[in-house]
Image (cartoon, rainbow, N blue to C red; front, side, top):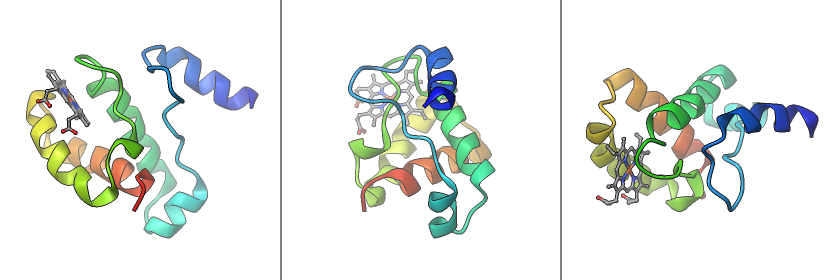
Amino acid sequence: MLRSLALTLPLGLLACGGALPQATALDAQRAHVELAQLQEGRSLLVKRCSGCHATPRPREHVAAAWPTSLGQMSERAHLDLTERGMIEQYLVVMAPK
Ligand code: HEC
């Protein structure tokens, strides 16, 4: 509880309606990726996708729809391929199936 508050508060820009979910070891395990990668994707999402609108939350799209939606936004956010891949991974893993 305290730990998640400490992580969430400095981000500041989060819209109401629930905090951006933190990836857990379980998420990493079921997606067969490193937890650190998902955490990096989340942090990039906050940094790069919050300038024009509230930080998008994974549950706004089903997993299969995120790559297309992110494709349109990655141009606007000037993401390179690595950044796009990290953000996409976080969104896809954390989104409803
Ligand atoms: C330069 C401004 C800008 C940046 C940066 C930006 N967006 Fe957007 N985004 C918009 C605008 C404007 C809209 C609404 C109009 C539209 O859908 O074209 C939008 C709409 C959206 C939507 C709702 C429509 C849809 O396709 O589902 C999502 C989700 C979204 N953005 C995700 C992201 C993500 C993820 C990032 C970071 C990679 C991002 N945005 C970065 C300007 C931006």
